[in-house]
Image 1 (cartoon, rainbow, N blue to C red):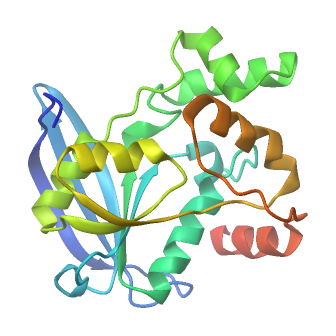
Image 2 (image 1 turned 90 degrees about the vertical axis):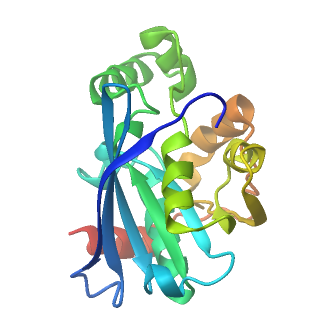
Length: 224
């Protein structure tokens, strides 16, 4: 895996998710380590791992504590997560949630410093993050691949707008049979999403814009 090899040091699987919006879902957890560095990862899946079948839906999901926990609406991260869970509810699938990916791997403090600079200077998240840390993305997907290997998943339908995720998986022997986009239609996010396209090559069909009021109301109600 590009010279980086994580090992699994602990895992827990098949804990029922007590959420009426997602009946039949289960939770799992992995702990991976590389040298002395340890990271934890959550799994949300349906139905059981044994019955996911060939080429299940998979979402490699980066933590967004500002949105996922506190309901901040600057980004589309939380919408993507719940949209992925909705798709898994319609089909067999798995979401891997990487806690250490918060702030694109730079952490919560750097992320809030980035937000302050964005608000004060009106710059994009990528410009602000470079000013704060000289980097705009420290995420790797080695842990994702170790987890997928352990689960016996080598063929998948990847839920993403980011072609880098597909590229990294394929370079490491996984077969991505389909890419399933997850795009927010909130018009206030258009500039933010365009910056993702410009800076990271995200493939986003903006299509018809929406105020997102109904979708947002449903989303935040589920979070409450």
